[in-house]
Length: 207
Ligand SMILES: *[C@@H]1O[C@H](CO)[C@@H](O)[C@H](O)[C@H]1NC(C)=O
Image (cartoon, rainbow, N blue to C red; front, top):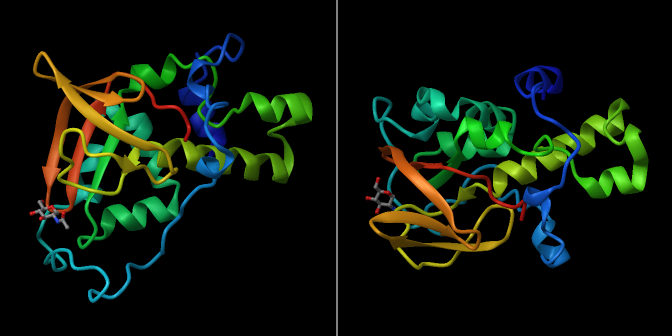
């Protein structure tokens, strides 16, 4: 992953203040282990979903980058092989909860920064090869916390994100809110053969 380019996108972000989006201390440790899932979907016997799309069917990997208001998050997903494989897989449905650019740039830290890493390792936490690997892991967890492995996703249905936490959504005044966290969904950006892209006004906690 090109952290330098991500860094420049987020150069304006202050790295100092409090860490609301990292408030995951209450999450059990298990939930923080990324669930990468199989790189290749199991044979259809175990996976009774829809058949593969033909080559001119539009799928998530075709549309995620189209909406400029979520292009920071779209860029993050492209650096994570397990995610790009999923979005290219027409037999697996996905709801992507893509935080709007301004929600990411407003974060008090960069999405791959974890205050625990700074506590344990100091300012060098993301330097060198190990540091880069650590940042990559954190970034994957951030993205996976915004990927729901079902679509359509019905109101109130509790589903685990790829990062492991159970989430659902409810409607209030005709708006959708992701729970827990009460994060408003501003719109559904795309609906394609293997899922939907929802635009979020905020970011989810890591897990
Ligand atoms: C996947 O999404 C399509 C809509 O694009 C839907 O028709 C199909 O039933 C979904 N499959 C599963 C397994 O949810």
